Length: 147
Image 1 (cartoon, helix red, strand yellow):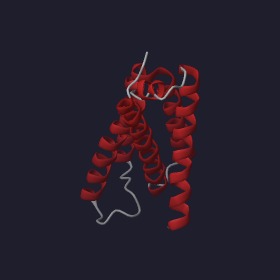
Image 2 (cartoon, one colour):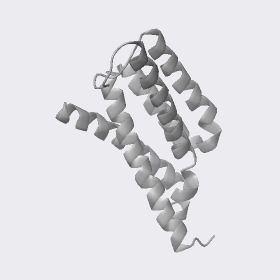
Image 3 (cartoon, helix red, strand yellow):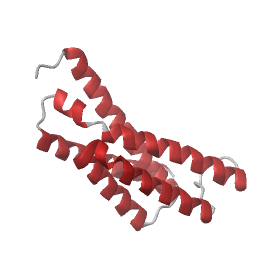
C-alpha cells in the first residue's frame, strides 16, 4: 500500500503529539504524587493499547474511570493547582479525565500512522511502547527537576 507524503507528515505529527501528550501525562502523574500501582497500571494499559489498538479502548477507559473515581473519593488534586477545596478536586479530576481519554484515543489509533511511516506491525508495537513509556518517564523526570 503506497502512502502519500502528506499522510507521512500527518503520521509524524501524530507521533509527536503522542510523545508530548504522554510526557504531560507523566508530569500529571508526578504532580498527583501517584503511587507505584497507578504507574504500573498506566504502563500496562499503554502496553495493551499499543498491542490491541482500538480493541483496548474499553479497558483503558475503565482504568481511567477507576483512577478518577478513587481520586474523587480521596479528594486528590495536584500540588500545583491554583485553587483549593472541593472546586479544585472537581475541576482537576474532570480535566484529567478528559485529557486521559484523549491520550487513550491518540494511542489507540496510532497503528495506522505507524504503518504509514513504513514500520511493520511488530516494529510499530515496539515503537509505541518505547515512545509512551519513555515519554511518561520523561514527564516524571522533568517534574522532578523543575519542582
